[in-house]
Length: 367
Image (tube, rainbow, N blue to C red; front, side):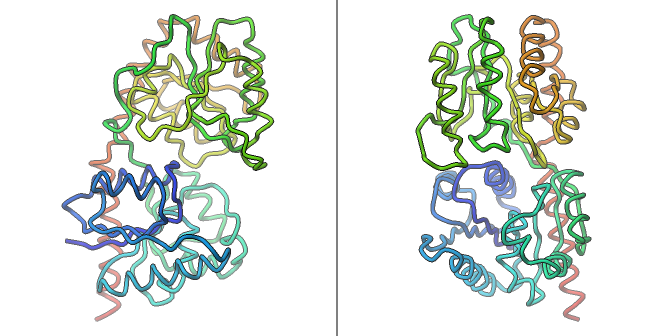
């Protein structure tokens, strides 16, 4: 059985963490899984579900940038204790932190889950491309592959494998009643890149339409600029009859199906799991016409696209679907079929094949 050390710096249940959790679950019994991660809701979920054979928790952050050095030390020592193991970095930032492992020539697989490089990875400059070319890459979409090329990374190999979506984790009967009011769900975060700032503008455009927005974010005031408190205030002013703050949910079963439509206003995505999760529930999607959503919604025929950042155009698309139940029924059928192509059973075997490639190269190098 192959042994893989999985490394993530994300403590919460964002898209990359949820995708990693699904992968870990689907590899049970086929790979020995050691997870290195911070304490937080993701670690707690992995432990509760038994998704890893061992969990190594990173020390609590105390020293700012020095925490990356500590994380690198933990990852390196964990891997060295497991001779012949593969390191799987859950993102390009994790690969940058794990540079010592890469420098030692050990087998490393890294996920590219974004369409741009910022922060530490961007500051590494030319060293980053050299570092990246010593790993085997999994790109979650053609956009992610293009990002690697822009960075000058061809990798030892680059394989496109979309994020796995486990229907059993997101599909379920409705857990909330709509009271006969057409309900639009928003499952993104409060970050600007997720299109959160567009929401009050869309709500305002639909002020005379009997529509209710159900937002899976919290309405608390954080005083963090990235949390867009002013946008939250604008949504609260719309009133609870128009906008409902559900809050974050670890268990999404029954949440998507409680909505008549899911709104995806992201300004940038590499993959976009929310539309797929909505489709798995047979719920149509209205999404911004960014490349990732053009690909997903266009391929599936399970929703409508609108001009990114255009609140009026988004509102028109929502109303068009609200007034066309026959179109929504057809979209629901196509959506479920399309979502099934992201089954973790088949996609995890594609990931295993990358592990085999990385190990084979190491054996050749050691002859």
